Image (cartoon, rainbow, N blue to C red; front, side):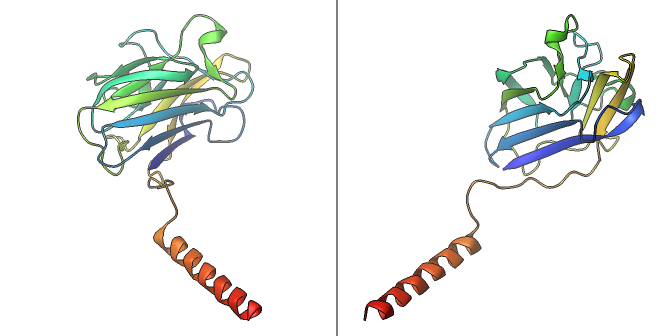
Length: 200
């Protein structure tokens, strides 16, 4: 299963450069499993970037509302960020302090630590409990995710962006559906019959 979360709505502040969504996250997992892979993708244009604070009390760059709780995580590739999880009162700025329980903050110092352009970061997540149908869930404010985008316009503007509220349901991309397999079998039988008649 893959649950996709697109951030394409401005909660407050300036509108980021380019067309929405400006950020996209994809979580790949199996229902009932205790592990999954989260890929964070920047779709930002111009000089826009995601950064965030360097400690748990600062505003993170990108926050999520997730159920169940994360037990541990590791960054496996891409532009890795510091992560904070299972913390009560996580500071997500005006979008709702305490409404998110997983957050990522890229280095404050230097442009190399920012998430921008077409960069991505991939994380393996381990959970204490089995995953349900939609592990990422809307918080009390109705949002699954929020991010702080900086460097907008002349470089001095910023904004908080969120997902559009109700996201599409997770998509099972593991293998073809039973209907597709049935049609394939029917076509093969028809082809075999046609070949037999042609030879005879």
